[in-house]
Amino acid sequence: MRIHIAAAAMLALGAAACTPAEQDEAGAKAEVAGERAGEVAAEAGEVLESGALKAARAVEEGAGNVADQLEENQAEAAADGRPGAVDPATDERVPAE
Image (cartoon, rainbow, N blue to C red; front, side, top):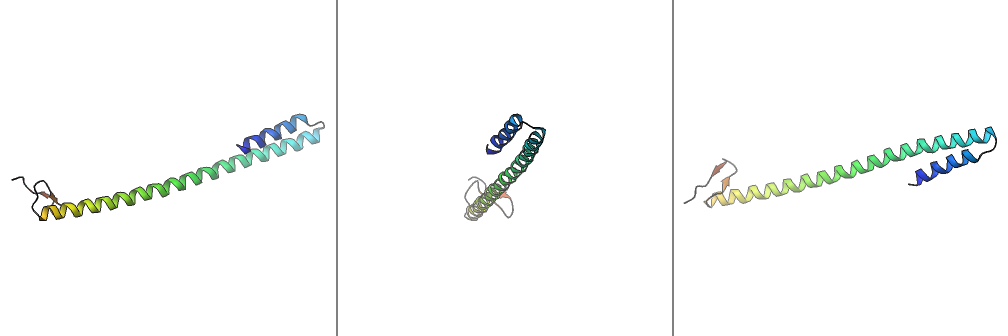
């Protein structure tokens, strides 16, 4: 937001400048502000992407932990002979009685 304001201010300075030299200087400043705006936007994109990556890794880790727990529960249930359980080692379901 500040970048847009700065760019607009630079353009306003260019329009208000009296001499060609002042107009050239204002144009150069506006160009620099525009370039900086692009750099800031790219940096913001990288920050967002790195945050999304961290979130995705956390979800992946959480899902892995849940899968491990479910597999452990199924192995225990199959070992106890509970109908419907699937032994993760053999992928065989305990038959219903």
